[in-house]
Image: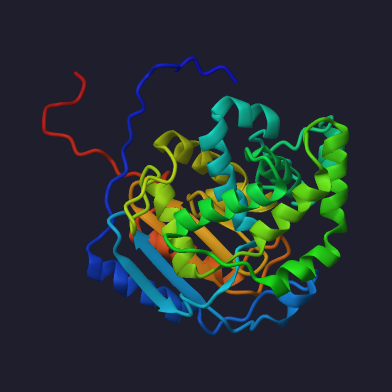
Length: 338
């Protein structure tokens, strides 16, 4: 796509969140509204995840100024899973740049399941986007490092900088996923056969499985998302994690592909860049304002948390977060066209 905007400064218009007390009351209202709903099914294709409490539910909102609003099990820990894709993508873009990652991984929705092999074959080995497993494996492989251990440590450290605290590996989940990730191993081998992965594909799968097995909370997700919302500055630590340009690229990809094959419907109904994970987490980002993190294990058929989606939709509408929403611009009398 030729946009012909190189060298033109990016202008932004983001508005503001309501006053602190209003945000606080709406986060609590969202929790109360959906806490007793039970739709969805806990994921069981990774055996250890099947033991998750379906009643667990937490919401967190972090503002770009660092203010936080928590409700329910907002600090309960679970594994980040596919949400890690968004932040590893940002880290790799920060290292290698916009063009390299776009050309190697892609930015377009496949329209197929997150672990589709057909999507790779139909596109001559191109993974198409970094939010499906094939693209995420290719992205992880791009992290500059001299060894698999160094690559893992750079990713763990980078995701911890997004969260504003050291994130720890859940060994039980990592082992369970490692025993059942044959499809990811097949995808990595397929990508290597097309030249999309230049290093040992099995080592890439191991690092990718580790990044998915890091423990986070809804609070952590909100902080990580708010870092993307504030030009790459962590609102808790004040550290510049990635550049503003990387945040823009990452949020663009999330808007198009972050909720799998439901991404178009999500954007139409809710209007926020977002990413979900099979453990029941969702992070949704309102550029310039802040981010929402939710946790609720029961998922819909696309692998997205049911209660999490509903809570984010409620907050998007009541807090005025939809990036496509606008009001009629006020005009003064006599300023119209003759």
